[in-house]
Image (cartoon, rainbow, N blue to C red; front, top):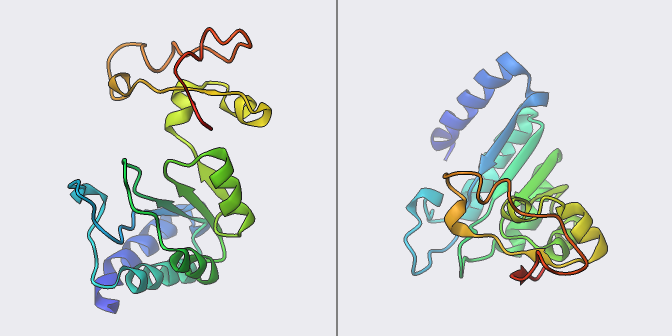
Length: 177
């Protein structure tokens, strides 16, 4: 195991030497099970992913990095991270933990309140909802994201989503928050 973690350790040490560990974060995309969809780019399914990632996180804690960013599987029918893993990540890593997936405001709050995360990253909903914090705070519906406009093209999808209006004219394709 230690030999497998050597690359991570050496890279983190080298980058920390240049920018400082207090300005360094590391992103993991742990995958504990597979689904019927081929998602090789997310990561490898380890024989014992819990132990592998916890050992890697121990290395990061010892290096004193500023934060750990865990990007969870976020496709339809994606498996959730095991609760025991979330608990062990928090026990192992004392700096900031950021989680990202298809989080709703409610699920994100639950994970922060449970102590599993310090911050929740929300990406796609921000594209379709430029006023996302206001929508969450006021319980307003979220506009649906048009996936066809996400990865390139013109202004469609990045600059043409309107802010919330009580008339509802801009939230015809609302999704639950």
